[in-house]
Length: 290
View: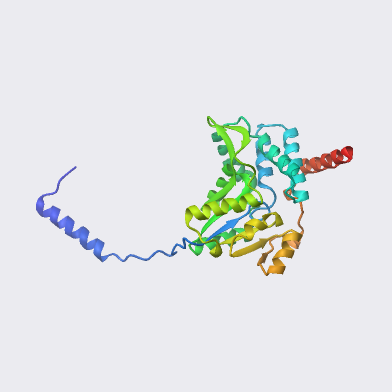
């Protein structure tokens, strides 16, 4: 390091002090609101269709598993969403479907693929209206979290890509950097979402009465009822009725309100074909079992 002569060193220090004193320091444009925040469901609330389906479809396209596994996963999602109930059989079917395609895989590999798949098949399915709602909270200095049954790794990618604070998602067990095929606890659904929000609120010192929550499904009433400002986004019939009765804001971003109750992706080509085949298989199996 080159040392300045004493006189020049004093001059440099004086110039630096003068510059620091003279500069105008603008206050932050956004004053953080650390007591309030917002929680957004993902599927059909933040984005069109089911994020886990797009993820699985992307993995299948990369030969991570076969079309039979994809069909099994879609059937599980169909059964779970068509019923819209916390029936243990349907929960188990959804759990098995969600785990089938990651068991034994390296966590780092799945995360890297998730980044690619987001760019390929998810980015253009984000509802612009919902994206604007998240920005309203961010502009108000509030933190914004996703709350979803989607695996936490994928949920975290979505949150980061959208500039949100973070995500609460289903946690899959790992050993030595690989997925075991088991969940820690269970799917983050229904009451589990509310429990996650309560735990986060305690950790982050949030006042839930000041917080907002957004969802499309009556399955998320525990989550919506937990906050002071619940909102319905593209709501199913049951949630719409509750929202109207309680005068909750209703945000409708679907064109012509043409919505499907089973949250399959609104897309052309192979995705629709696979979804249609899976739906047909589900109906056929139901008939055979009767």
